[in-house]
Length: 358
Image 1: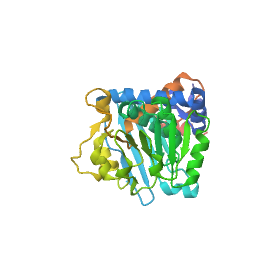
Image 2: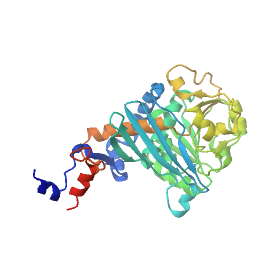
Image 3: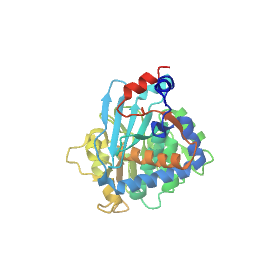
Image 4: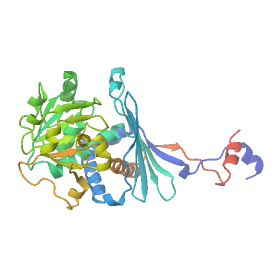
């Protein structure tokens, strides 16, 4: 190739310069091809597998930027071979402007070179992995034979939670309550025909009647009492996933005083979870220890178990590696982005820029 040709022909990026990108549309098509139930089940199994090798991961509480309107967070982790991070926000007032409360995207990269392997939307993927994480925890903590779940908070996460619990735990009935009746109506429409008995309830107190699993998932970022102590009887499993930042809770402290509490990563959960209400020495068990047999989960039929789930980066790592496997196996599942500069000579980034002028 002559110098003149170099000067007038932009370089063709190599395959290494292109990074698979999974858009929202591509994510939806992929989930429909796999099937929602298999996708949730596969994600629950992938998350559990990564919890079994918990000690292989770098761990840090997420990096958060709080404002009056909400929070923006980065959630990074690595297992030494791969690195992943998620960008995610939480802005409850967004719905008043027709916007999502939570949006997210993520990156999976190869540690050896630092080059990204995948760039993906994670608004949908986070909904899937959050539901899968809840169901995976319930698989280890809920009472055996649990068939009824109360779903308090019927927003964007509710249907995913119900269907994941159906697929992984085996529930057949969901009792719904939300302070906004339109949210409950939406949830009932979306769950119709999916093999679940759906019951709309007039209050949270009514919703928990007869439920063996109680899921709380509300959006307001404030210290609230969605679940009062007198609403929780012996033997239930509480899946508390709405408290996910400082100053936001859903459970009365008296419930925590009676419950055996299980968490993902204590340094993060003590800042963001239900246990932020409790003394620093409040005892918790890390879920990965239950999964690996190093600690006990449910020990009796009348025990109250609480999964204080705030969402942790290893779950996003699991979701991104699961997604990468799908994209790798299926041609055309992602579009390729020219994301990485790839000059002929790695030291000549300037020359690549000048040759592209024409």
